[in-house]
Length: 299
Length: 107
Image 1 (cartoon, one colour):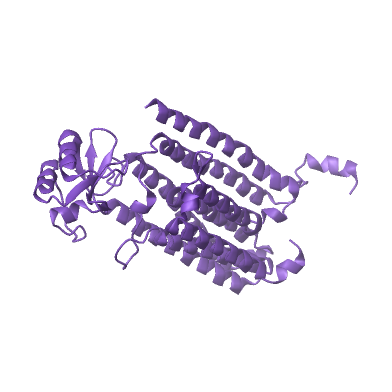
Image 2: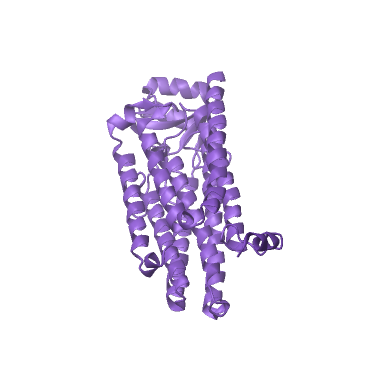
């Protein structure tokens, strides 16, 4: 086609300067805006971490549990979640690839497996949230923004074990500051670890708590956070929640597309580009998780 | 992408193994925290964190360029998508993180 012919068509929408369809371009433009949204979330998390470098909780003290296993296993569960999401990304590429070859049954197979992976990820996240909300060791809030923890010598212990109860017995526990101080006075092997990770002796701990303690925190929500600074819990709920909502909407969109594939909509249309477009969204969700994994759990 | 590459699935599984390997390596570093990486401070944070960030960017690159197919699109499209992020995100990080460090000094 000559230059002049092209010029005329460019203003009538006939040209595709990017050699990509309208739908695919719009998906990419949406993903740019979403990239900037998530960047802003993670950057503001970074702001708070740089503002409170001494008293910010360490992720390896917070996310330590694995279903059906006892003891501390930092990082293992999120590593599993990352594996599930990467795996579902692979099944998604395979679905897109078989879509290019117009092999309907294989698209159905790999798209279904992608949906299974998405549901597994959401289930894991629900478990992670449940565990975070229930709490693990308990903490004591103070007049400042510091949260202190119970320790035995130089080892982190828990409010539950000092008070002689099982934190996972399903009951709703509640302790007052006076009860905790009395328990410290009776059991001198216990002491506290301050928010800046400094361990105090038993007498120093009692003095510190009498002067500063305001509340015993069990678990985490948007107002209180037993693990440390309350902003940590706020960012956790907001960022992983916003990502989880993306996964959830991704699963819904994948289901709709799967129904269309089964009905033969794309077979009649002559191409499976719709699978490719929802695939872009799904990979983006995986991409965001890769960054959340690094900045929330590793760094 | 060329037709030859579309025939098989080996390139998908290659990227899968790279992503899995890098993630396993990151988790291993996160659990064992080699003292050399964990105690050396470089540009305001541990060397270990720089390693994590570089590995994460590599993983992100594979996802965007291969899984999302952006590496095989027209160069104009590729840079239309990538440049806004490459310009705006480091700018945002620079402003917000240096403000955060300043807020710490002012407390």
